[in-house]
Length: 178
Image (cartoon, rainbow, N blue to C red; front, side, top):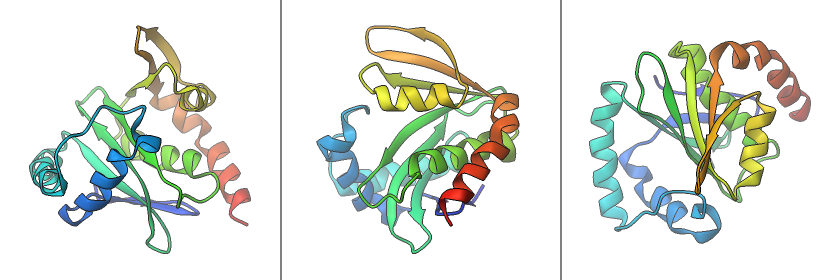
């Protein structure tokens, strides 16, 4: 499951050489406040990626670098806990190098991998309660809110809903890229 491209962005699988970028991005408070904490150094991150690559081969998780078409990295996203019935979507970060509409485009591309290429029926998403921008985007995607606890709001994104709205997302992104 190599990668996918849209009007402004492409997603490619993470490689060990991305360890420095990932470590830096995940350690910056302005980007990591809604994510699970990360410890260690670049070498620890490289070793984590090497272990992850084994899970990638088994299609248990897919971790992508989000890049502009000029090759500039601008974020990360991950599909994990992949089963025949669902995948969990998360570890989503966009940095200051992102183009306009990068949130919509990177989400659309990564959900397309799960729903269109892997043909999985459902995505599970959790978002920190204080991350109102992400929760709003998920609701805009037509995701079903399934629960809340002291830390997270939980959503289900259904394949049929996503694929039914895909032409709308593509049209919006293509209009933006002109």
